[in-house]
Every structure is written in structure tokens, then in C-alpha cells.
Length: 94
Image (cartoon, rainbow, N blue to C red; front, side):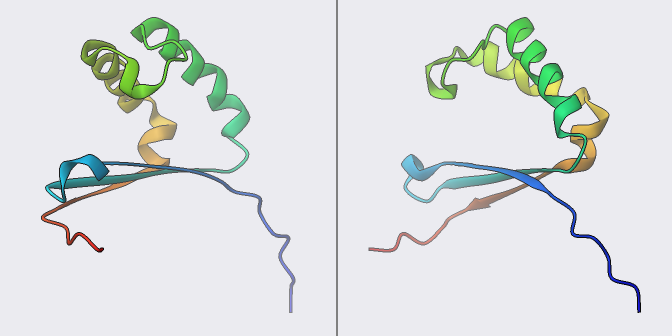
């Protein structure tokens, strides 16, 4: 029986929509392995070109966010490694 070597994975998880009272909730996960190091400079370049820079997401203009997401969507690696789920009419737990 062959023993496999564990693979190191990087998972970047973010959520948005807690302020929508359950109307919309989005969770995204970017799952990477060894390609992580090659992707980071490309993401930084997209941040610069889109105008987002390294500002917090909520503090950037809508046009910058939209440009960033469109550029991100064009990266083949991201197309294979980005997963998201959007939920509507969520239950609010007290």
C-alpha cells in the first residue's frame, strides 16, 4: 500500500451580506496549492490596474470593485479554483 504525501492547500474564504437582513448572503472560497506564489503578483497587479489598490473592499468605489472582479474572472487559474455560493432569504438566528 502506497502512502501519499499530504498536499499543502491554501483556502481564502470571505463572506458578504450580513447587513442585508437575510436577503442575500454570499460566501466565496479560493482554494490554491503550489500555484499560490505565482498568483499573488498577478492579483496585486489587478489591484493596481483596477484602482482598488490595497484599500478595504467597502471603502473602494463600485467601479473599482467591478473592474477588479472582471479582471479576476479572466484569470484561468482563478476560474478553476474559485467557488462561491449565494443564498437568499436566509434565516436570522438570535
